[in-house]
Length: 73
Image (cartoon, rainbow, N blue to C red):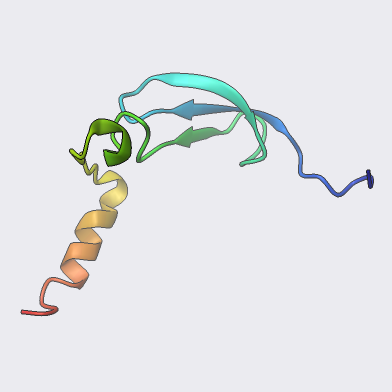
């Protein structure tokens, strides 16, 4: 195996959509960072039986709807 070609692997905290937290090892971010999930197994339609709970965290959905509100009308 070649040296110095693999990304750094460290501990991060993951926060689910319902607020539960857990720590895991990842290459995302840096040591001690927090990853806030917008969609997880408790809110994704593939795991919830088709009901989609769309959370608008950070206003991204609102921004998208406003940008394309007149399209196709």
